[in-house]
Length: 282
Image 1 (cartoon, rainbow, N blue to C red):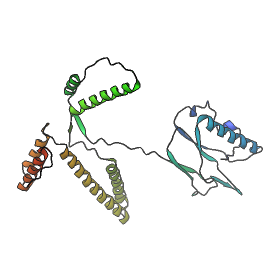
Image 2 (cartoon, rainbow, N blue to C red):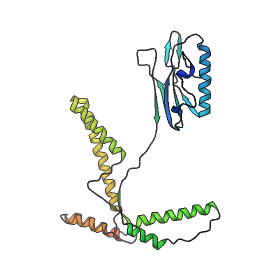
Image 3 (cartoon, rainbow, N blue to C red):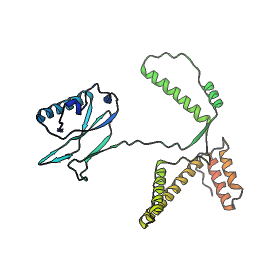
Image 4 (cartoon, rainbow, N blue to C red):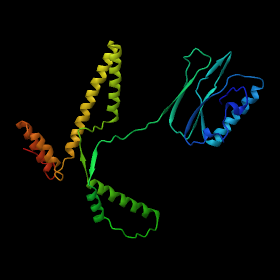
């Protein structure tokens, strides 16, 4: 149980009535600091506050989060007067009381781990919408389908989704532009760290800042090389003869390429165009 010391009327300090506009949102985080002055009749008020706060948390599905250690130390007393109320925010959290200030009251810090991951946009697709429309007209015919159960509805929805996805994939092709760079999140984070370390080195000009900048720069070069190699492998794997992407790629290497590179390109073409892609080259 969390004890809170309040000097005056309950609603004046808590303001936790269910008609309060601050609590009409479905997602919120609210921190509240309570007064620590104990006056006459404080024991009865403390019991009311705890009961009201507990009932409010039950009626509104609000979690009361408090640090594991007290937040105020008095003469032979230790109490928790800082709380956090969380509603409809189901993420892992840690809360702690900071005892680094020269005061009888310690503030609290609560950290939420969101674990939100972004899917990087790794390609640009050009879609021929006329081809897309013609594909749907050829492969889709509207007929009244008698529906008898929910499973049949799910089946028809899946069939329509598959048809639309197939039409889009057959009408789109991947294109690469030199002025568009889609980097994965870890490379963007390393670039940010590199820029921050470079600013620190330019500001202080001390050996530790220079060492940190060089370390991050070397790590960034290593990860960029891995990313470029993977991008090149994915590009080679996506080359086909249908859209002439295979010929355009090889012709760009044939202009000023040495004979050894032309031989490697020829071997790659033979493997790529073979029926099973498993034929051994003598």
